[in-house]
Amino acid sequence: MVVTSAQAEIAQAVLWDFDLLGLEESPKGAEFSVAVREAPWPEAKLHEQLKSYNVTPLSLRFFPIEEEDWLALWKEGWEPTAMGERLLVVPAWLEPPNTKRNCVRIEPGMAFGTGTHPTTQLAYEVLEDLLVSHPRAGWMADVGIGTGVLSLGAAMLAPGLKIFGTDYDAQALLSCNKNLKLNPGAGDRIHLTRTLSLPCLAGAMPLIVANVTAGEHEVLDAAIEHALSREHPTLILSGFMSGQEKVALERWQHRGLKLQSRKERDSWIALHLQA
Ligand SMILES: C[S@@+](CC[C@H](N)C(=O)[O-])C[C@H]1O[C@@H](n2cnc3c(N)ncnc32)[C@H](O)[C@@H]1O
View 1: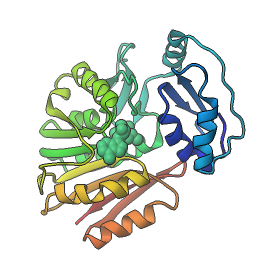
View 2 (view 1 turned 30 degrees about the vertical axis):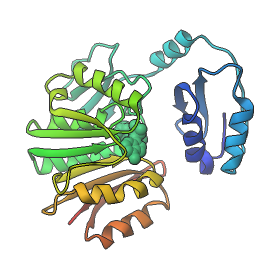
View 3 (view 1 turned 90 degrees about the vertical axis):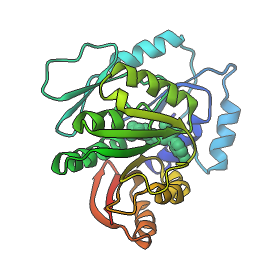
């Protein structure tokens, strides 16, 4: 399916509501290849859902493929991906190459987070800058942990870090759990909970990273504020598209946090805030 880049984010959100085997986004972010389980094709339902968000596909094509073919094709195309200065994300089915970088092995399954998406890269780069310039131990929360790629990367950079990872998606947590086991040492310090917010964490988290959509940020703000430590809180927020971050930034400035840095790539934006 091809849509305009302005409609790409909402189109992707709509696609994820179908029973997908996988989703691939072109580097420009406006062309999606998805594999759906449903038969017959959910064409009418898809058009209806897209229409309800005023999304009109420029083109939309259905064709049959075997599940194994899709996975094999997708696996063939995914190469080890460097993130920041110190991390290499390696597909679980490949041997990690000889490198000075920390290698995180990932089998994404149905979860988001192969390290190829700008939102993951920007969030990791901010985390890396922070953990390298100011080494820290103690707790971090990863809200919307997906495959676990950000948490595993952070745990490898900071051996004293313990991480509380949340996701509302049971499939994501299953994949993440496998990835924690694929990366013992770092994975052993990451604890997972399935939740829509951050319960029982009042003021416990000095560092929180959240890479979710702008809409989810709005939903999660209050829970994040509640969980954030009152002393020296640090927040890394990714997943905003151009124009969406201003209102989120204002919400946090009202809560007393200040912008420390901002990173942008391919119209995606990540923010680093501190008190
Ligand atoms: C864009 S992915 C990020 C995955 C990974 N952290 C990364 O950076 O690559 C967002 C993840 O957040 C989860 N998510 C979105 N909103 C959430 C919420 N309100 N509570 C918990 N998880 C949420 C989604 O299921 C998804 O796994």
